[in-house]
Amino acid sequence: MKKIKVLIVDDSAVVRQTLTDILSSDPSIDVIGSAADPFIAADKIRLEVPDVITLDVEMPRMDGLTFLKKIMSQHPIPVVMCSSLTEKGAETTFKALQYGAVEIINKPRLGARHYLEESKVVICDVVKAAASTRVRSLHTARVEIQPKLTADAVLKKASVSVPEMIRTTERVVAIGASTGGTEALRVFLEQMPHDAPGIVIVQHMPEHFTTAFARRLNGVCRVTVKEAVHGDTVLPGHALIAPGNKHMLLKRSGARYFVDIKDGPLVCRHRPSVDVLFRSAARYAGKNTIGVIMTGMGDDGARGMRELKEAGAFNIAQDEASCIVYGMPKEAIKHGAVDSVLPLEKIPEAVLKAYRSH
Image (cartoon, rainbow, N blue to C red; front, side, top):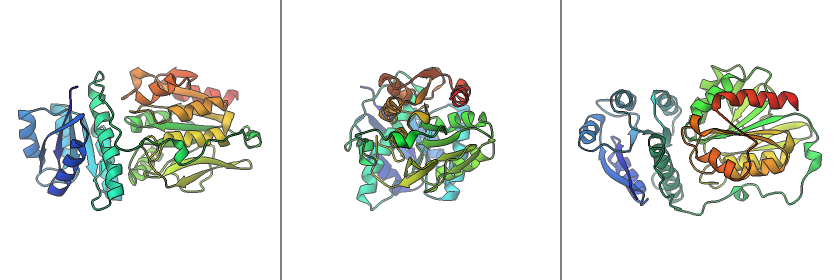
């Protein structure tokens, strides 16, 4: 099996070593080198071209965004941006997605063993997702560093249906996305009218970055977009995005839908998890849900979407041609959970048609 070659670019020797240790723990990844700044990185790239680069935002001599733009204009290579847990860092790093970066990861936090174990799972998966965006035929074995939990870890599957909870006709759109999802969600939400049904979204993204993401979308969309806060009501013309590093569940009190934001373990190797959102929507909204699964690596959302279908929801998957990574939609289709497979630009129209015909 061909290994994924990774170059680490970060001015911190501690971060370079930590990322090297984390990525080297995965047998499908080969760290071919590290560099303290973009100039050193450029010299290394001339000697051996990596499959993926992890790139710090703030570095001496040349900042990460400038280097990213040079890479994308001269020799496009999948780049994963590595940023600190700050609001300022989130705003800056989000620009990197517009410049061509594939994904964002938090700099690994040292000292906390539990956090480092989770970092291994997330960082290795993100690097493998990045590699697959350039070489579609590359299929790497995913190594289970720790047990892959299901939505049971956050919300137990209901043993019986709760019909009294789904008598309302108010519809809710539940969306799950990962790699490439920031652009896909922008395309989708820009086409939503001000009277669109209430929307709840899980986009795999670190904490703080979802705040910046929601703010940017809110500036270009007719619907109101915000990072969800515990207890927020799901309203027509509003889209709630799960905060990074927290699970988001859809719940209901009488005729009112609201979101429950909570901690918990990684589910399907993610927090927030699409499976958790979809399971909660199946339980509390049932046939009033329109489920959408978009571009992303892995299978998060596939089982939850199957539960949505069993509850009577109408489900849509993004097609392969318009996906950056076809993993999540493909798995949902394999689970028999999807009613319609559409290119990204056709999904908003299909959602609105389902909403208005209900």
